[in-house]
Image (cartoon, rainbow, N blue to C red; front, top):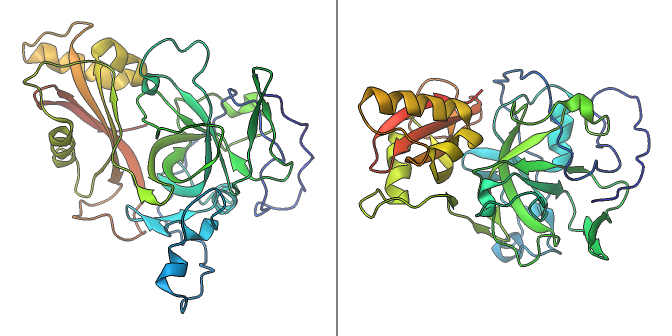
Length: 332
């Protein structure tokens, strides 16, 4: 159980108040925004504060728990990176809907829920906290995890849903400098009306793309074991990208059986089952499949993801272990 202080009432002025509720909801309480306005406008990154005449060494300061947040990459995978506070300002102004965004900050990764008995942990939903400072947010006290963060710390509660890989951490309660990709308005999360402390700001974490000064490769969740003649993970990523509109970027992939895929994405599992039956292949509970999550331009196919004028959406591809595409679609 995570014990948090009672939040102070926020000012009632307009939508551009730079603050989230002064404290967090209990870590396992998931909130969701309702409605998804598709926003296609360009959003500029936060103004840089680094002196353009500074040396390259000064610009590449080591990303450690004491590092300046501005040493984080200003752009990644074609998207501008923003602080938590800047992202929340845009969200409250209705300038961010359900498109994919990149947020930089300090990530605290909580332990898997006690009722999560499956392995690996990537098959469980993992609650996290993303803040604009490196100050510790949680602390272990007599076997329990309690809230330690300051009242004014701006933060989000991103949820890494089943099928999402998180970076290994020696101690998940020590904030890790990261850039994450994800979205608001994910229909897989709970209704926002269940949490007045964090209305309309539930965030699903799709990929940690940069951590502690380095780009991270695509994480793979190994939920099943395929035969030796199955496709390699890298080959699957290339095939999934080729089956999607131009400019697709892989966010994550999982090798799971059909039953587990039904827990991760029921729509993808249902369409895969129908296609397997149509082509005369077995569609049992233990049928092993590749599930790949993608970031795709919501516009005309292009060769790259450069530029900010077209929003990025989530998509997915389901493939057999030997690389045959069974189904592909944009996510809700």
